[in-house]
Image (cartoon, rainbow, N blue to C red; front, side, top):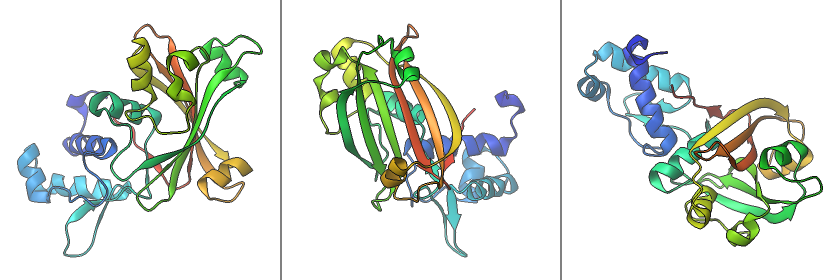
Amino acid sequence: MSLERTPPYLQVVAALKAKIVSGELAHGDVLPSVRELAAQYEISTATAQKVHRTLKAEGLATARQGAATTVSTRRTLHRTAADRLEAALSTGRIYADGEYAVITAAELAAPPEWVGDLLGTEDGGQAIRRQRVTHNSDDEPVSASTSWFAGELAETVPALLVKERIIGGTPSAIEAATGRRAVASEDATSAAAASEEQAGLLRIAPGDPVLLSRNVYVDIEGDTVEVGESIAPAGRWRVHRS
């Protein structure tokens, strides 16, 4: 949809969503008031009220009677691989304020066939596997993900095989060591039932619904830099900006 055809309130909603997803507006931050939105974006107060209602309806904001409208993402927002890549490229940080990741695996392993095909791994070959669980500031798991990288990066980017967070994220570490810069992400999502392993990582019951995502980071040549798969518990929303 072209910007010219997008209703004014949705243009403002999109601008605020971008700030929320990037972490510029964090959980608990006060959103601009109706009057402030009207003045800043040159819209009517009725349109500004619609902006607040839309963000609340989508679970990204909350308001109490007589109180300001604030950002509410701790239990509702699912940041995708594309969101995290954008954050890494623009801010050098892959996690929003209040989030932290625990690396649960960093090893050489035989990749699934679909991963091996994307990485160009030969039959019987190994790739680097990194698994992490991301938590919010309440120490609740918000997602669990597994990233795969070409096996030859074990020598050039040894940090990929260490069970510690890489400041700035894996794309930055790979770029620093090889010059290859991840510039785009292709995502696919599906609903699924949590396996026992996935349930353990997210602290939910096996069989509970989860959002399953697969992503591929590519460089300027279109070659694969990273292949990943992530899961998020039910009730978290993926925000698409267009």
